[in-house]
Length: 323
Ligand code: SF4
Image (cartoon, rainbow, N blue to C red):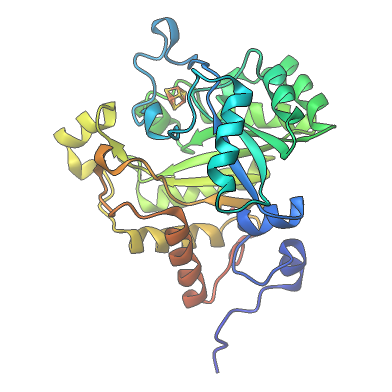
């Protein structure tokens, strides 16, 4: 008889401390922080070094910053006012929440350590998450973040986006895969936790190429991973490419994407914490794919069901090194 669920190896179950099929952020964070935590986005009025001063020629081809900054978060308000507004917004549903302040908009650098220290002073804030381009991370910043990480939870999120330099050039990313390796190494050496983001469904990437990104993620000294499906947004360079040549883009539905994510997870190191699978841009901005505004929690359920259905789990075909 085939068991209903696969037997998760004892070493994985001990690592995750649950018998689910993957190492999800929600369960990991509750265990790590001893309760429910919520990422709370803030916008400190930073800018994108990739767009500034004519550099970057319009920025990354997929990017539209207003698509991922929540309404409660505005640089017109001070950092502490934004944290206050966010905690009221989320606290209505879960009064016992703790918060990870998420410096999400654009790419942070410059005075980010001072801003992070200020955020950490507020009661209820248990850590900071900082989105950053890999080419902003230098030895000095890594040391400063390392000092902060000795006292508080600090997670730096870097956009890898693709494991192919060809795709990074096509999306006008302005850095190479090697730059992400270098940034992750600098952070790891200073004891700073890091996460990388990957976009699945980039124009011209085959399923095999996308699955191959698992090898790079496994090699990087990172702790967490965020997987997004590419949403082609109105007003971006990819919107123009899509209108001219839609065949370049994956034409999958949410179920097929969930199946792909399940395959991808089987190739990953079991210690990697998986933050999410979906982009949730406002529907009126999404040109492709149109999945009726599916939410991350719904996609996560589909991925989990796919894993159970296949009798598979995160790391089930991982070979101990690359994928
Ligand atoms: S994705 Fe980040 S680096 Fe690229 S243009 Fe947008 S804010 Fe700048």
